[in-house]
Amino acid sequence: MSLNEKSSTQNKMVLVSLIIAILSSGIALSSFLISRQQYGLAEKAFSDLHDFNRRQNAMQLVGQWDKETLPSRQAIYIEWPETFDKNIEIEYQKIQEVRERQLKSLKANASPYSGTPLITDHMTKILNFFETIATAISSNTADEEMLRHSFGNTFKRWYIILGGFRREVVIKRGFNPWEPIDELNKRWNSMPSPSKPPTGNP
Image (tube, rainbow, N blue to C red):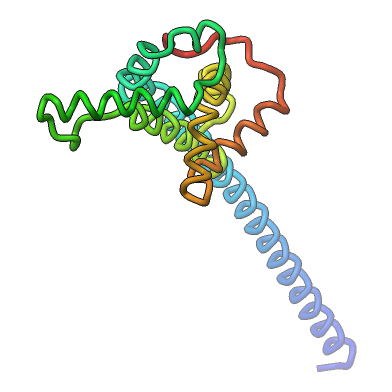
């Protein structure tokens, strides 16, 4: 084989190798682009699913409001209807007076305290429900926009009405058991008031 033939063969081999390298690069690039597209689709699907779950959780909380707190709200309203008309705080001394009256009534009727909620139990029930809402929002497991639209004004009302009770509990326990509620109050106060009227009556 002449030198020219060897050189031509080598050139062909280099050309073939170059073509193979180019094709391999093209295949690799195509695979990368496909993988990135699939990742983007998967990421969007995950995001959509997360948003759906957050909305579902918010709807569940809205649905649980009356079921879990209506008896407690009614018990408080019966004792202090003016607080809802004027949106004012219930004095802690008055709360204590009602609680003492309820305890005396239970003793007089020989009724056990266990299982019989006092006025302070009702107040705790409502605050605990709002703590659940606040925690769901801070952990991003429930849709804040939906919850604020449903509970914004109602939350503010109860935050004011039960303010004296909250502060007294904090003093007696030495810590704030409803800190998420305080944080949520600050957050929502920094936003425009929702137009929806308070949920429930009261």
